[in-house]
Length: 267
Image 1 (cartoon, one colour):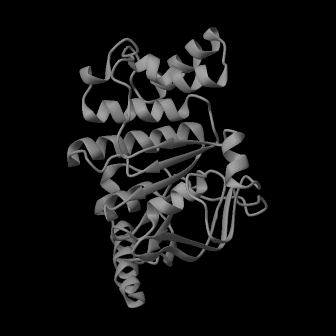
Image 2 (cartoon, rainbow, N blue to C red):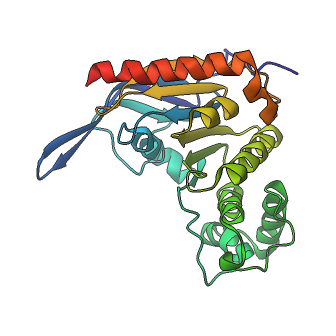
C-alpha cells in the first residue's frame, strides 16, 4: 500500500494567507477567523476539526465564495474564490442532503447540469456515471423520500460530482447519521476519492472520522478560529476500518486531541 504524497512542484489548489473574517452584528463584531494560513495540494483529503463555532464551516464557505473574508488572501486554483465559483471549480455538499422532494434522484442530480446548459444526452451520461460512483445505480427514478438518510446523502454527493469539478467541499455530510451508516459511508467516500483523485475539504466533529479519512487534518481553536495544528497523516492511502485499531491511528488521534486542548489556550 502506497503512502499518500502530494507532488511538491505543484502549486497549492487552495491557499489561505493571514485570512481573517469578522462579522458585524447588532451585538458587536464576531471574529470568526483570525490569521489562518493553509495550503491544500492537489488530490489531498483535508479534514477540518474543532469545537462548534470555531470557523470550520466558515472557512469552507470562504473557499466556496459563500462568505467574504475581511482580511488576508485566499485563492482557489490560483483564482479568487468568486472566479473559481464562476469557473465551476468545486462541488459543495451541505450538512443536509437538500434534495428537492418533487424531483426524482436523477432529476436532482440533473438540476445543476440543466442550469449549466448541458445537452440531454450529456446529462443522462453524467447522471448514470455519478450514480454508479456512489453505488446508487438503479435509483434514478426513485424520489428522495423513498431512500434512507444515508442514500440521500450519497445522492447529494452525486449531484456535487455531476459537473466533474476538481474540488469537493463537504460540510459535515454524515453528522446526522448513526455510527454504522457513517462507517459505511466513510469507506465509500474513500473509495470514491481513490477513483476520482479529487481534492476534498471535509468538515467534521469526529476525531475517528477525521483520522480515518484524511491525508491532512487541520485542528482549529474556539472562536476566533485559528489553526492550532496541521497533521500530515502517515497512514497508507488504501485503508479499511480495521486501521482504527493500529498504533499509528491511535497516535494521530491523540495528537488531534492534544491540538484541540491546546486551542483553548487562545480563549
